[in-house]
Each structure stands twice: as structure tokens, then as C-alpha cells.
Amino acid sequence: MNTANFTRTGRNTEEYIFAVGTYKLLAFAIGTIGVFGFCNNIIVIMLYYRFKRLRTPTNLLIVNISISDLLVSVLGINFTFVSCIKGGWDWNSATCVWDGFSNSLFGQYLSFCALGVSPRFTH
Image 1 (cartoon, rainbow, N blue to C red):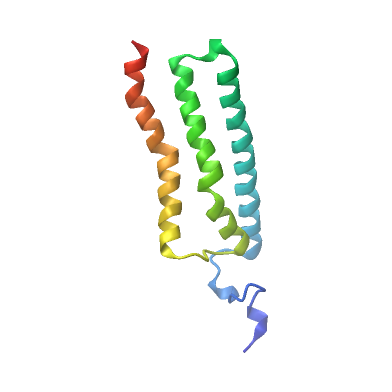
Image 2 (image 1 turned 30 degrees about the horizontal axis):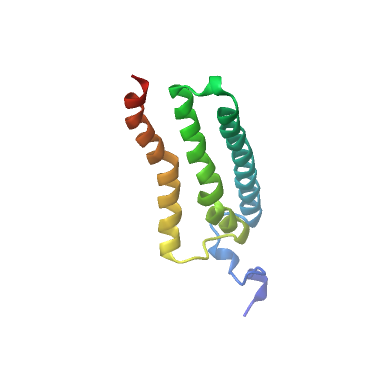
């Protein structure tokens, strides 16, 4: 067996879709987006609850989007981040389905629910 084609994770380098350096760059980008997303969304939520004049129906929708983004930052990108560090998907297909489902759920559907409920509170 030629060990020159294997990385320290035991994978054959021919199994990678991207170069190993690209995975590290993607991990850095996803990690940075996750940290900044978490911090920025916490700030938006704290400002909304701290200042009463910001508590308008329009700003409530912004807070809803911030909560959705916060959930994506906390729960949605963990598997993708670790996959970029490891250079590929190491979990089973159920985890893959959960990763896609959680990103869709937290990213879109909660905001759609808020938009559907908002006319009731704006009258």
C-alpha cells in the first residue's frame, strides 16, 4: 500500500472533492460567519428588549429573523464546520438530513410564520 496518497485521517487523497487547503479555508470562512452571526444576532435581540421604542411590529420581524439566524449559527452550521475541518462528511445519512432540515427550518420557515402572524398584531 502506498501511504503517500493517504492523509492523517486515513482517507485517500483521491477521495477529496477539493484540495485539503480549500477545506481549511472553508472551515475558516464558516467559523467566522458563525461567530459573527452569533454575536450580531445577540446584539440585535438585546437592543430590541432593552429599548422600548424599538418594540414595533416591523422590528419584531427583524428580531424573528435574528432568532432564526442565531439558531442557524448555533445548531445549523456545526456539522458543516466540522466536515470542512475533517475534509468530508463523516456522519451517517440521517445526520445529513438533519443538517439540511435544521438549516431550512431555522433559516426560512420561522420567518414565514412570523410574516403570516404579523398582520394580526399590526392592526
